[in-house]
Image (cartoon, rainbow, N blue to C red; front, side):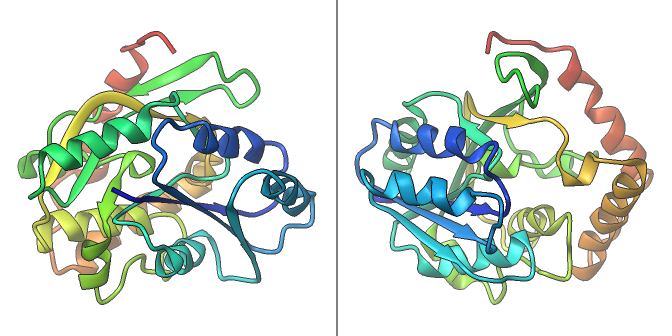
Length: 255
């Protein structure tokens, strides 16, 4: 199957080489790679241009309204059967990730999406793990307790996006990925398959966790994700979500 990977970027010169290297080193050959840039001014575009000398990376650099707008734009430009999104400060765990994702889809033709595990690593020392997000198998009841699929590990069939009236709701600045996954699972009832392996390394300290103010904003958006889909917000939802993350700091596989 042809897999399309989208990397939204903006002023990512410090990290985007790791991201690109992890994509172009994949053993799965039927691959399309797009970088959707928001007109970076820090050298990001020059770095991508240098890679383009050797690799068929499609670069689009133009003003957008944020990361979710970039994701929407990228999805519309892809031609693959399967679509994954890898942010410009994340990178794949090893060179066999996409081959394994492809194998799961090939063995399960009725599956709409595949996801796996994620590890958080130190921003500067990416060999130092700070947290392990073991996703586990999907059960609808788990969502009420704060569970959700880690978005960077999610690979979705093109037809799922094609059927959506909207993909990422850009009225959300921090939780449009959460809202999309919630809507896909609870409303659209897509069929997902869990790959019990680490798929992505994510640098700790993303936008939603950069400050207490941002965390509070993120929590509000999580609640709104339920409301815009006419779903009742579970009791003690935010508290249960926070508590559910504690185990991620205790489980430490080798990185």
